[in-house]
Image 1 (cartoon, rainbow, N blue to C red):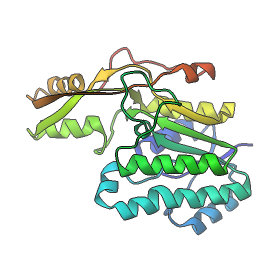
Image 2 (cartoon, one colour):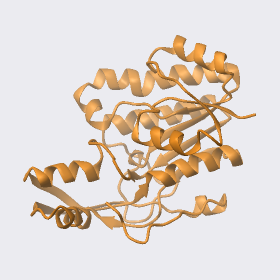
Image 3 (cartoon, helix red, strand yellow):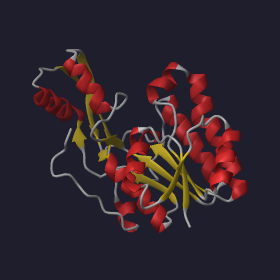
Image 4 (cartoon, rainbow, N blue to C red):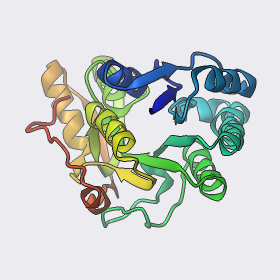
Length: 259
């Protein structure tokens, strides 16, 4: 039987995954501090966990505000977890980010060059490298931009909505991103558990959408004029979905991008 332990269950993704699949999967929630490896060990042993999902981490903004805490929480805590999972022969599913890559005109695949631009993505990549070095049974998910209903601040769409409603100036590059609905991320995690998928996978729809278009859509929906400046610099983060097709995962696309 697959017995799943998960942290970060109060996060946008964690809450979505549990609410959708707690009846069909055997899931236990770790509600302690991920920096406390002793509590994690007790939790794993007590619940007889054989798959652990690491979602919990500090956000990008928190990492920039407190780089030491970011190092401890987003790297050292992961390292300690990996060291323990080695001994127990437990599978790790690790939520990483597409921002480990550098921007590219071409769609990104799992072998695209990496170049983290901030502490958040740097420690995600360092954790990935440690996992690959130490574990054999793992899944690393490099998720693109997650969105969905009731998403809190700290993500692009709710942050832009707040700025528009507050009549703040918005300055962006001529950027294109790959947005994936939170329901689809949760569905992929379940799919990977059922199918026992291992390795590294980008998780994005392969569809490109401009940030300018999203901001203007929010402005229209809120009936609030936006003070928007778009720089000439162009950058792009869009997934190549070939590896997902190979393992039989097909996206349920929304007809309209619902913000």
